[in-house]
Image (tube, rainbow, N blue to C red):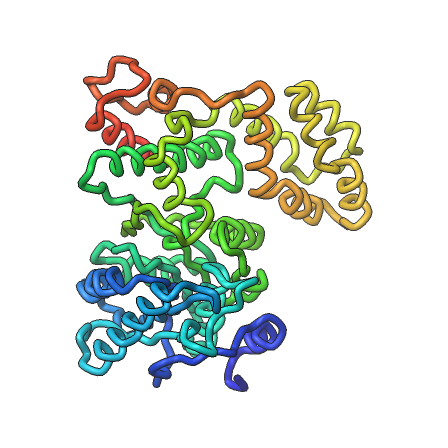
Length: 433
């Protein structure tokens, strides 16, 4: 660890996880390391590796794929057996150079005596183990940013993925970003309906945040994330959450850097149902197929217009007393002022005023207080207090037209158009969010 930069050494000493086995140990340093957690993915790993091996890349020799085979101690035998099959497959593939355009290593946190603890084990810890390990194999002799990227075992990528991410960081000296994504369409209609519905829901939230000019208008999908090594250690690394680890990781990054959208390539995350996390894409697909919820509703755009007024009011270097903000918030909407009171705004604002020395610090503390999580909480509060979710396609149509997007010709205003029209709406929304 002595050859690592001081900030990297300090992070690894204080926060790093080093109790793992890596195979094979990388013999050289890399500029771009992609961390990929995998649990019960023996069918999907070869598909992803083939996708990555087919890259038309000038930089593949600078890229390391680091797979984290993981499960907890109490995982079922089916999971442990599947992970063992993945390990055996990787051992053979690496030995035979089955994927000649890839540099592959894997971390074993699944086999007997090496499993993740039941209390903490999950996707967050798996990502953290891999991302912490990546820090030790990055090439710090380069003056430009060293990149840590994330993928999932059940996704595929466009053929220019390596170069698009690598070149973006090197050209723009980027600290944090995410790659454009499209969920591939399943063959059966019910699963297709589920993923179209869910992706529209995801994208309309980011669309609304963009309308509001929120600093948190970016997607938070684990397989799309990337950041510099410097940014990673600056925020204390990846969290250990068993779900929503991607949301909280990206939110922390956004507090120290602008989150850039890398549009020159695309990731195709799976739209399958999944047992792996208690919410997210897999569980939303499960829920749709189970028919337990009314899925065809999205956030009310008026809640984002209200958010826009609050963002314009609050995100300045000004430092008036709390009563000023509460009074202004009540004029915007009394639900906003009540939300502030419910979220301990008065006490927190007094603390911010006491501890901030200048306008720049005030602005930073405002952003830390009204962060991405509290933004989401406000939208949910408004949803439950006067701004209910609205039927998906009529509301989406209205707002696409507002930003100059022409609607599908066959759409006649119905609440639930046919499947082809639903997919056309998703493609239109993809163009603006």
